[in-house]
Structures are given as structure tokens and as C-alpha cells.
Image (cartoon, rainbow, N blue to C red):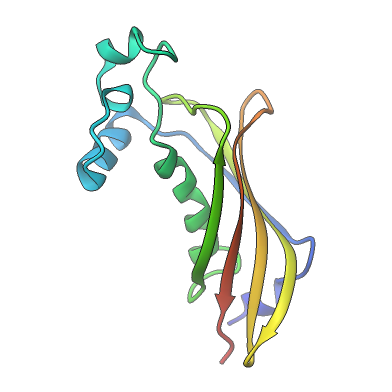
Length: 139
């Protein structure tokens, strides 16, 4: 796995994404979380945020996208994820998902990697923070 040579303490990977109402509605179908704050425009307009918000777990899934496909990459095994939901993410609001390596340890020939996970809104404020632990198997 090439990614193993690129992983180092302080290493960072990030990307930007926004979620459409259709994506949120699809997630509601898959997860069975049909909370109208996410899926019903009229209901959400009168709710605490004044508009529809993205499911927190859908927004947090961006960390999985990074870890499992980009950094460290394919074959990474997600072991643990702690999350704090600080602010809502709104429909069509661009956010930046970022992971940063804080520790690397050998684990029976594989790498046990600890990373901070942060989802930041366009205004620079954090929406989700946390810490992940993954296992990167070496061939």
C-alpha cells in the first residue's frame, strides 16, 4: 500500500463538499432518520435553525470517505470515532472535512493511526470535531 509511506505525524488531508436536499433525503431513507428538521422544508423553516440541516452522521461520513479512500486510503480499517456536534450544517452549505495524524504506533506489523477529525463551515467555525483511530494493514 503506497499510502503507508506518506503517513506521518502532522500529515493532513482535506476536501470540500456540500450536501443537497436530495442527498439528505436519500440518507434519511437509508438511515430511517426522517426527522423533519432534515427533510421537510416547511417544518424546518419554523424550527430552531430556520432551515433544513444535514444529518450530523451524514456530515461526519466525510471523515470515512477520507480515511477509507484517500488518506491513509483503501484497506484502512476504521476502529473508533469520537464526535462532537458543535453547529448545524445547512443544505447546500460548503464544508471542509479534514483529518490530521496525531499518532502512529506499530500493531503486530500493521500501523495503528490516531487522527483528529474536523468539519469546518465556510465562516471558519467548526461544525464537528473529534478523534478517529484506524488500522492500516501492511502487506
